[in-house]
Image (cartoon, rainbow, N blue to C red; front, side, top):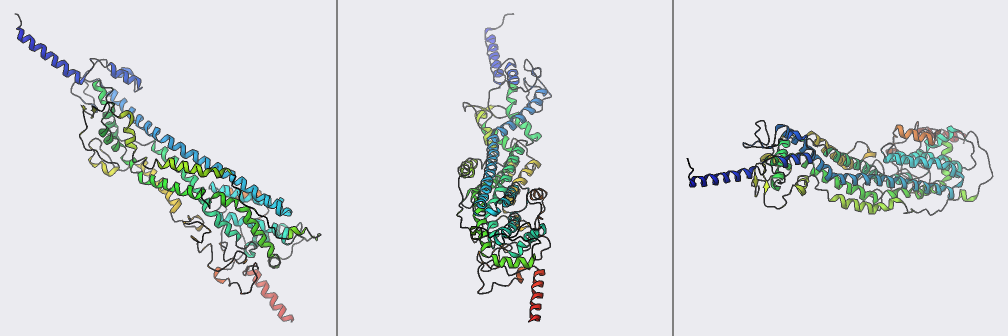
Amino acid sequence: MEMNPQRLKWLLLLWSLLAWFSGVHLRSPSCHEVRTAFQLRQIGPLNFVPDFPGRDGDLQICTYDGPTCCTKKMEERYQVMVRREILQNIHFLSYELKYRIEKNGEAFQEAFTSLIHVASNHTNSLFKTGYRTMAKEATEVVKGLFTDLSLYVLDLSWNIDDIVLSFFDSLFPLVYNRLIQPGLNEVSVDYLECLRLARQDINPFGAYPMKMVAEMTRPLQAMKTLLQVLNVGSEVLNMTKNVVFTRECTRALVKMGYCSHCHGLTLIKPCVAYCLNVMRGCLANVADIDPYWRGYISNLDELTSIITGPRGVEQALLRVAPMVNEAILHAQLNGPEISTTVSKVCDQPQERVQTAPLDSTVRTPATLGFKPQATTQFANLTQRRRDFMNYIRRFRTFYASLAEQICEGELLPQDGSTCWSGENVVESYTSRVVGNGLKEQANNPEVKVRGPDSLVKKVVEKLLYVDTMLHGKKSKKSEQWPSREAGSGEGKNEDTESSGDCDDEDGCTGSGSGELGRKKKTNMAGDRVKDNIFPAVAPTLKGVMVASPSSIPDNPAGSKPGTAPNHYSLSSVALITTLGLLCHWLL
């Protein structure tokens, strides 16, 4: 039976239409391109990929009624692959930021170490040129001061009050034996310890110890906190790289990135709006880190500004030598009064060897002009700080824009004409695009988002801890963050300064002194250092009773500047009272 030519024509047309429709959904009669992409991306073994399209009823993500180049094993490998790819993208986007944070932390620490060395040499030079008779012994005391300051910044030592006041405690026996009473020689350890412990009551250095505390506290606290904050930043970025994706997110990522391969479309890109919905759903919890990260960068700006500012770390440390010089001059000017008080508190030394009068330059107050030398490595950090902050401010929106950054670049359609919508090739994605953050995901058409993530919660806690270190309230005075610069007349605490009109050379403890009732920490690292530096002297004040601030009388009118303090221990008061009654009885 011969076929009708008209009928044959329709059959040929129908065959052409079927071939065309099949080409739309499966451009290649084989899965060769899919196998190539599977191999190049190292997704899994090639035997997982069929040679020709077929039907697989076990598919759960890339489901399709027609022939497909995907299998269930391929889907499983695709799920592993998408998690790896997104984490690699996050690592790539955060790598340079993490590197800059860590390198600047190292630079600040190295500069601080260099500055400690310069300031220590500067202070030793003061004794070698101005106080030669005590220079050798003072070297260990100076070394102890700067070692403790270094340990403080590394969070391994006492607070600054204890460090500075302990330094002046150790300095007083040297000043008294070599400058005020230069005839003393080979005195007992008990006598030296008495001088050290009595320094708080005698107050030979006036207000200068507490002035040094005030000048050092804010910049060194800022330096210590900065190193901790930079470490926290590095830890936060490390934690972000290990974010865990939910099952719903993983399925959405496979659907976006690899379900097109099942149709032989290995080069098609996902629509940008579609990608944003998927990534904002997967990174919803991560995006909520944004306000805390912005606060973190603001805290970095504040800390680095304090450290490199006009009253920063360099100025504070290089001011140690001039401040020590002024404190010693104050003690020399008030030598007779100090000697009288020492003889009452510590009695007479067990051994006293009279020697020829020393050179007058030793007894005469030195007038050395020590000025800070801005030739340290720290001086270069002003420009480094500026460059660092200009760089890191560009990452203020790092977490808020993470989804957008991942969807840029390779995921963007090359020609902009067609893109993958998760189901088909389309000219544009028509679903609503949601915003960033967990609250915005309720209407996400691509990803069902669960509640808060535990890892992100830990990241937020770390960033909140940074803010607490700077602005949170602490129980101890020494650990409170000063809100204003010390020494400017602002931000003073009643516990550290009295409201009396007390000049620097008055010798009273009012302007000064936060030493009343101070307690020293017995930190293990600090104790070991102090024992090595000055083993014969106890590191804490023991057995010294101090009058309360309310019992300290005002400085009498007509008293001489620089007179001895007007408060003593109870034992010295009792001794004076007894001597007075005895004199009255004899007369």
